Length: 163
Image (tube, rainbow, N blue to C red; front, side, top):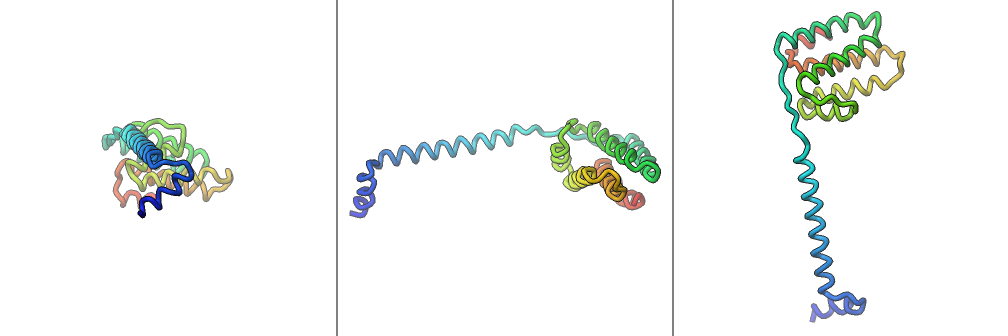
């Protein structure tokens, strides 16, 4: 009797239970296809083959960065541009893709080292501010230093020395 009560409104509307069953199957199939497509897309994301640099090369980049920091007092904008270049070069040599999109570069780095990714993002944000803001440039330089230290796995004492 209860089944009959549930079916009567559908019958009045011209919808048969067979039609509802077909619609339910179609919806389930579509959901399965969407989930499968999303899962395959996630798997299709290439894994980055990141490699560490030799200690001597890493030290060379650290020395170059120290020279950039010394240059900051006289030419802050140029120093920050050079710091960005050093970080990008280290990333390329380690195997990160050479990306034009800063957001994608941050995403790549975050997959390798979340803290370095946050620092790179902070540097990018600081660079979007006013051109004559030396404090903003100083923060960007510090963020690039932190990224470099993370990438080259420099010890915390060396990082603190640079502050």
